[in-house]
Length: 273
Image (cartoon, rainbow, N blue to C red; front, side, top):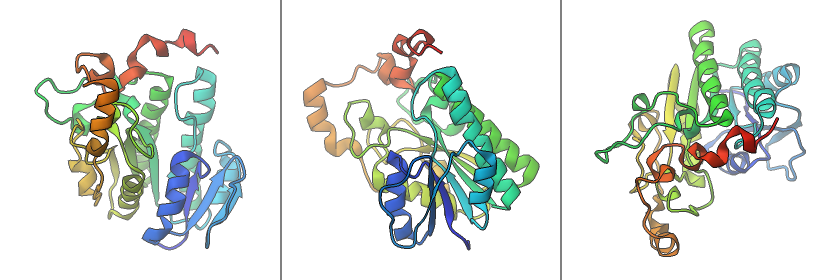
């Protein structure tokens, strides 16, 4: 592809990882965030703009080869905040790509789009088709809307759209649940690189997780894009199990894809409008 990749949410946790890793894979970046990014890296363009602003996004997308949309609220919040930020920014990213003639969009979906899905009783792995959209929160609803909008823009306008159902994207796992759901920084870069590189993916939804020994998500679809995960959370298992004990798989935190997001702590009363 010619032209830079427009990366939204570039100052965020995942955006910062991608700003470091994607150029090493040969991708030039046009980094956009609503706040100034504190450092400029060689060859990087930087834009301060609101990812919910369609006009600003369309301007930013001119000449880009792809959009990687990571902007948004990264956890549960009030309905107005989720609606006005997460859903609107997804629409703006896709519509800006269409208007600017950008052929591919990579969207940061989430396991919370299907949070009430339970892990297989037989200990098998969940494929994407085994986990229908069952959002666990308003945040999860925004990711369902993201996947639906992505599907629309593929079918109606011919874009290529890859939705990454990201697990726990942190420097290292900090809970026993994350021994299953962790997506390492290096594997985050590898996954996005695969989503950008795969020839003619059409519409795809894939799990975003490292090759963890304890994972319950199937990586076949992600590997078909060219994803080659290198990390396994099991290297952290001894210390985490010693600190927290072996996980109780009947506990909703470990039984359901969305974990603690499916508990009463995330009821709407705790996030008043």
